[in-house]
Length: 172
Image (cartoon, rainbow, N blue to C red):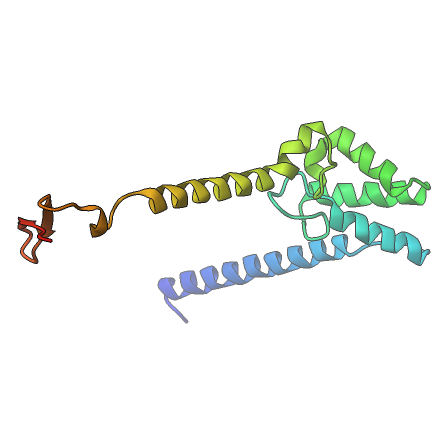
């Protein structure tokens, strides 16, 4: 017979296996729920898959509905499935979900006046960067940094390796 410490060890080991079994069972249940698409029409199933790839999960940060396993995404998948079966078009489904969850749900937002900066912003910043580079290049090419601009007995500063600056005169 194992002692009291041995019984506690076996009890904790059994609890760990029980928790592990529950976690594995839960994952199987969730994956079984997300893979349920009971379409009889292949075209509807293709539209369904396309829609859940194009729509973002409102709860998850940056996942589409297809990759998300949250309860919100499961509900949205069921809702999209019902809307497809009732004969709604893809645009009607997207507009319905956009009204309900805003344009955040769309991976590719509509081009409009309120998303203009989103679409034109990167081009605008690239043009500004090119302008700044050209301006700096023009400033550097017109600055007198070479020795040819020194005249006669003007002093020219030299820095030695020890950090001392010595003044020498250029002779012609």
